[in-house]
Length: 300
Image (tube, rainbow, N blue to C red; front, side, top):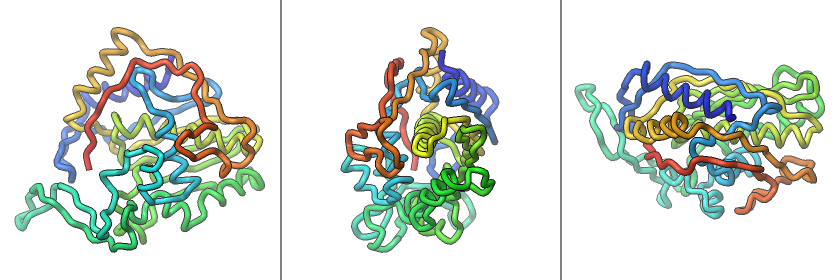
């Protein structure tokens, strides 16, 4: 059965039973635990949830948007029917608008509509975040070079958290750093996440990095190894609690299902050649069975 489902729902139970309710900038409170850790062995299981449906096409395309296309342009995703960044898209006039909690004159948090002017050059983007940073610092190319040509290197790090670019990012990277190594012919990764929307973000993020690692391993002639995942501030928004309880109930009453197998087109020998069209035809899940959708609200 799916180990990821078990570990994931154990985290959800922990948050609901031990977590602290806190106010945050979105105006919707969260229940949080300060930290959590996962370990995945890709030789044993491809980590994707079965107690709810995870949309692999959208997840992979978002990952390719960041690390292959190295883009911050939301239209790239929209052209492929991926709409998960629409709320953070800067308008045509260069202004991003959102309803958030901000301090008033007395220091109390009050909900206001904020208008942040990024400049028209950032229209339709998320500002200087994610793919923008990857492209500016040639992160994907540098990592691939080290994996292939210097597998003993202990400096295989991609860091999306760049202080000089945080103020011009609509949303600074939540998954902000990854460390990589090659051991015994296997590619391994350690991922660091500063803030984790457990119902919405975490299932996508884990699957994305499992696919990314598998792609990089295949194109370097390696086997996929392990992923360690460190989370700071693992939270559930209070308006997501019913959905999480439904997911826990599904596991209690129906059980989780066997994890599927990941298929990558074996003919692809270069990471940048994996299909990033709407069809995403070089990536498939074999025997993916799940217990159906659960819709969770998103908070800006």
